[in-house]
Image (cartoon, rainbow, N blue to C red; front, side):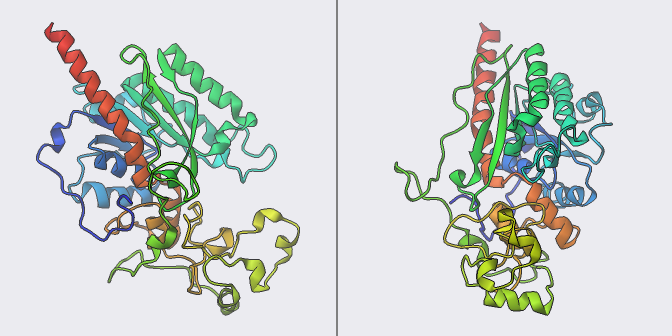
Length: 381
C-alpha cells in the first residue's frame, strides 16, 4: 500500500545524496508533493520554484531544514524569474537538469469553470512559461501535471502552442495521459492529466511510460492489489500533531452532520436542503460524508470545508482534519503544513500525491541512468 498514512520518521539523507546521478527542477513546487515523491524515487531535486508564502514555508520546513534535500528554493514569481538565473544558481550550468517537473496553476482549466469561464485566464499562459524553462535547462525529460479540463476544446490553443514549442525545440511529446492516483496506491479517486516530453536528440522513444498501475478496483481483472480504501486516513491521530485540526462549525451544521448517515451518507439524507441545492445536481456531494471503504474523493484546495464537497468525517460530526486530507494525498505523518487550516488545505489540494509522483518518476529515473551508461560507453569507444 505504499507509504500511505504510515507513522514513522523522516527518510534519512544518505551520504551519497549530493552525488545522485539524476537531478531535477520542480516548477510550481507548492508544498513539495512532487519533490518528496522525486526524493523517494532517488532523484535529487536541486531547485524548486514557488511563490505562495505558506507553501514555501512548508517546503522549506519539511524538505530543506530537515536536511532531507539540498534543494535551492526560489521563493519568487516564476513569470518574472529568469530561467538562466535558476540554471546558474542551482548549478545546472555544471551538472545537467535531467528531469523538469511541474504543475502550472490549474484553476483556469478547472471543470468548475462553466461555459467559457477560464478561456484566456492569465494563469493558463504559465503552461507556456513552463516551456521557457525546458528550453533553457534542456532536460532529458519534462513532466507536466494538470487537471483533465486542460484537454477541453476551449483550451486547445494553449495545448497546441505547447506542443508546437516542443517540436521546434526538438522535443517529442507523448499524448496527454489521464491517470487516476488510486491506481497507484493513493487512497483517493483523483484524475489528473500528465504530459511527458523527451529530448529527441538523446532519446528515440519513451515506451516505458506511464508505468503500469500497481492497484486496481476489486472488480477489475488481473492479479494486481486492490486499491487502498480511504479508511487509512482515519486512524488515530498522533499526539501533538499540529495538523490534527478541522473547521469549527455552527451548532446547526453539527446537528445536520449528526443526522447524516455514517460512512458515505449524503446531505439529502440529513434533511437539510438549501435553495442553492434544489436545482443543481452538481452540488450533490457537498456536506456528504466520506465512505472509508473505498478511495476518498478528490482533495481540492477547499478539502477541509464540507460546504465545498464530500469532506465530512465518516462518523464524527465535523469536516475532515488537515492531517486526514494530507493522508488522502499520501503525505507521511511527519510532513506538516504551515499557515493554518485554510492555507494548509490549499497546499494539500494543489499537491501531486506523493506516492503517485514516486511511481511516475521511477521509470524516468531508470531511463536517465540507462542513457548515462550508454553515453559513457560511446565516449569510451
